[in-house]
Image (tube, rainbow, N blue to C red; front, side):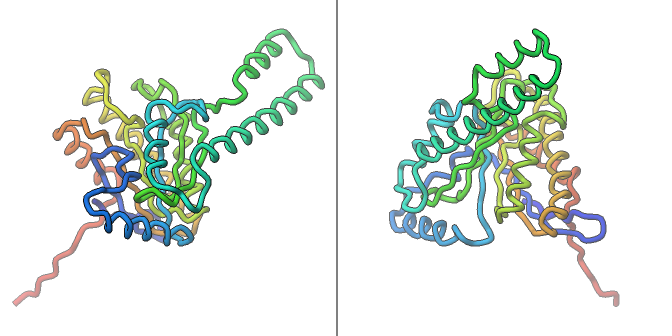
Amino acid sequence: SFTIHLGAQLKTMHNLRLLRADMLDFCKHKRSHRSGVKLHRLQTALSLYSISLCGLVLLVDNRISSYSGIKRDFATVSQECTDFHFPGVQEQLEVVQQVVLYARAQRSSKAKRLNEAGNRNSGNEDKSKNGEQNQSNIFPGEFYITRHSNLSEIHVTFHLCVDDNVRSGNITARDPAIMGLRNILKVCCTHDVTTISIPLLLIHDMSEEMTISWCLKRAELVFKCVKGFMMEMASWDGGISRTVQFLVPQSISEEMFYQLSNMLPQIFRVSSTLTLTSKH
């Protein structure tokens, strides 16, 4: 855990955490004590209408209604306890799907009118046809939101669409996944989400191509971008203290974890304590 102050003149204090954990651990209820689960659910439910909501960024593919991989696991966890406040995950996804279809239809209609007004050529027509093939899918960098009152520590889940490009080592600060994080943080500012958990490496599981240099390069990029976005927050919400949790996969090595924990205070301005001693 780290405490930082960001801002030039008016500084805002934020809390940063680096955790090695499964993203879904924040959604699952601990079953060790039955009464403890009930109390935890009650505490989460009571904070639904507070100004201190908790959010989670989940990396998904471009299909909204497809339960596969981590989306299937998340749906399973969310159905373990009944949500008496919000519609079920499937119902919320169906609403999102309809909104996406409507938005795509509006954009296609507008583009069609613009094409008819101008000089169209065969290349533009082919491009528009290709764009109409997957109207129900979302694009990398776009995200949709589900709301929950029955998860352990999460009220809002941001389902961020990413593609296979995030597994390469060549993404930049302008990558759709990074810009998606910026837009998510902006939503957090406007809707009282003061704690947000982010996958630091923009992946949920490690693979062979993710070497030490790959991890360090990716972590440095995300740290620097999130720092810039947090400095923008002061203009978005007036400078509210927030907690950002950076999560890395559980399978990451101890050495790699400590290298990341040493990198964080170098990029962010970590508050240091002063020890005052009297002179005799």
